[in-house]
Length: 121
Image (cartoon, rainbow, N blue to C red; front, side):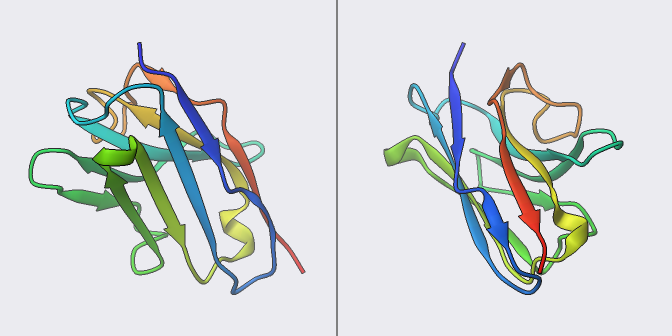
């Protein structure tokens, strides 16, 4: 089972940007899909963005389209989430996810421990 470690979270003002990183313990080249999920207090975990290795197709939650970008660097075994124009509704714990299901919203078998993103003035 691949181990995933997120980083890059923190406190940011509305309108600001953050870039999250997810470092995998082994090559992600063969992992068919990876994604970022988030869970806000009192809400269910939701898919934010996902990317598949074959062809690089991506998908995004409607609430983040045009503001967030997911990318993967197979050479560094890392997946990124660039988040721009952040607002208070983006406040949540963000989790990296890998494996079958990561792209569909169900979630793959491998999860990181999460990184907190807080958007506040």
